[in-house]
Amino acid sequence: VSRSDELIADALRGIEEQAVVPRSMAAGAWRAGRRRHVVVRATSVAGAAVAVVAGAVLLPQAAASGPAQVPSAASTRVPIPPGQLRSPIQLRQVGKISGKPCPPGSHGLPGWPAPGAAANSSECFYLTPEGMTITSVHFITFGQPEPGQYAITVDLKAADRHRFGLLTAKLDGSRPPHDQLAIILRGHVLNAPMVGAEIIDGHVQIDGFASRALAEHIFRLLRTR
Amino acid sequence: VDERARQDFAEFVAARSAALIRLAYVLTCDQHAAEDLLQTALTKAAAHWGRIHSAPEAYVRQIMYREQVGLWRRRARRPETAMAQVPDLPVADTASSLDTRLALQEALRSIPAGKRAVLVLRYLEDLPEAQVAQILGCSVGTVRSQTHKAIAQLRSVLPTLGLSSTEVHQ
Image (tube, each protein chain N blue to C red):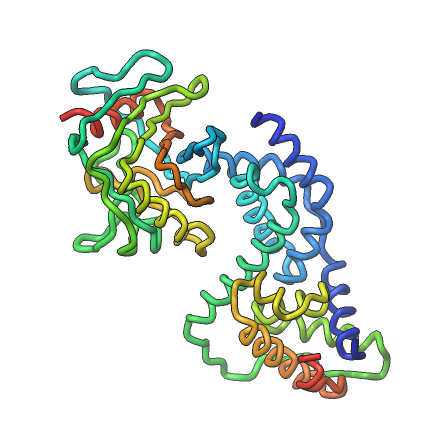
């Protein structure tokens, strides 16, 4: 080690010694991190939870309208025939998220409308071409994994499972916000979870809904034709 | 399960906050920016706690390095601001080792955050170039060139340090 190396290291140590240790950041970081964590999750083949997780786009309350076909049991498996998704689910890599509404003529997509608001969201998502569209699935499950939490689990078909594995592998480890996967339904970004792992089993769980009404609304959009 | 994970996380933060804020500070050279950087890294660590809880510190440190280099890259894309005068830079006064140390600290504060991150990894953490490249997510060539440029910048401010480009690659 040369003298100049020692001088630089010594000067850097002098700088870091000037830091003031802040009050505990644990509680705030945990809340923020877990809020992002729970929105999208995949279950491994072995059944253990695999973290994959979520940019917290706030989900609005939605009126529970339309035919009431949501199961009342805590978790009920509802088979959806191939090709019968009422609304295709688009998954696209996020390129940029703007905190302003999408300007007219822009190629960005708005977030899901806020509760009681008009159609426009206050966020605009600009997406990369990377992604896929899901038109049919093996099953969709509506459930309540924990009290007060509602989840929709999508069980992908084999071909989509492989593509989804490749897509999540690509996003995992990408620089923010390119590690976020926009879930698009009817031209709106329902959520934009941050992908924290490659998902190979094709079970994608969407949760973090603000209310049961909203979870049911989304479930109906997906399953009812 | 989540409550146990929350406790583990809180214990980790309590035990390692002092060390982590020092790293954040030397990367940003600003207390508020350091706290923001650490908060961002801890939030990401919380999101992935199930996967990283066995070795969280390396993960948090890597996030801070990458965040800082990413910020520097984003700023680097912006056009430079024309200035009427060259901003003042500290001039070396080698009358004593303390003066040299303080002058060098000022010089380190004045160089871009990305280059400073490379120097922190190379000289403070004493890591080889390959490992620095792995942590920053760039090539060894980039690490080498950034180190070289940073040293050259320090040398221009403190010529009496006697730094040479050959020392960079030792």
